[in-house]
Structure formats: structure tokens, C-alpha cells
Amino acid sequence: MYKLSYELEDKDIDSFVSILQSSDFFYDFEVGIVISIFDETMEKGQRESEYFWVKLIQEGKIRGFAVFGPNPSTVGSWDLYWLAVSDEYRNKHFGSIILKDVELRAREDGCRVLWVETAGRPLYLPTRGFYESCDYEKVAQLKDYYDEGDDKVIYRKIL
Image (cartoon, rainbow, N blue to C red; front, side, top):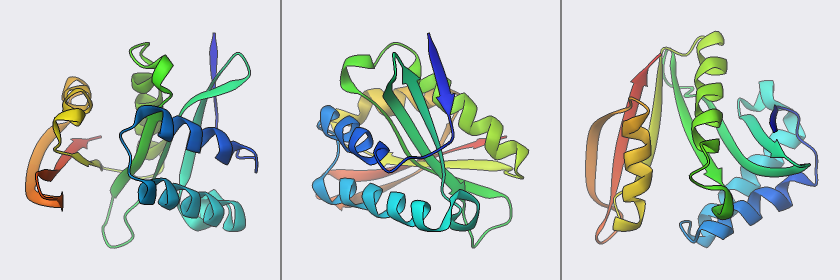
């Protein structure tokens, strides 16, 4: 059995970093960005920072998480900044559970469209397939955005 939690504790950052590192998907600087967002959220709170978090907890441990929030230069567009599940818990539908919760919470808070950016490297093929299976529409692909041979792929879902 699992539960979803929206409360953050200082110790959570260790689990978030561990989850990101378990996948071998993320660059070190990306992990640093999550730490920075976490620190800002802890300092200001989720409402003021506009970074909203959800944790999926099973057997007392964080197995996955997401960070999302409104894009301040739009009306009703929100970004899913991070969605990650610990490597050993992938393919157990935890990502889908977290994503559905993100969509529900964002919609309730005024989101009309949720945007997702992901990488175009072959490693990310299952990630792109995941978003497509969750009814996200691929709307753009920016060639060599992250690095040579690593495109930025942008998805959206009207909520």
C-alpha cells in the first residue's frame, strides 16, 4: 500500500536526490537544480514559492516524487518540473499515480494546460512513451537543445 503526501521535511531532500541518482537519467547539475528548488520551497513554503510537491510513500519510504507549479508568465499554464520514481520501483504504476495527482491538484488550482519537457536521448524513449500513454500531446522538439544529439521534447495536456 502507498500514500501520497504534500508535506515536506528537511530530510526529504536526501530521498529525492537518491531517487534521481538511481535512474542514471539526470545530469549532476539537474540534481543541483532540484536541491535549489527544494531549498527555496522550504524557505518560502509551497504557496509562496509556487513549487508544489507530491511524494509517494510506501513502507515508510519515499519511492517517487513530483514538483510542479504555475508558469508566472502565462495565464493558466503550469509546468511539471520533475517526476521521478526510484529505479527499483519503476513499472509499478507509481509514476502514473503521481502524475494523476499532479493533474488533479493543478486543475483545482486553476491550471488549464500542463506542460512537460523531457530529453530526446534514446535513454528517454520510455519516458516519452509514458507521457504519450497518459494522453500528453507532443507539440515540439528542439534539436540539440540540451547537448548535441539531445533534443528537448515538449508535451502538453489540456486539463
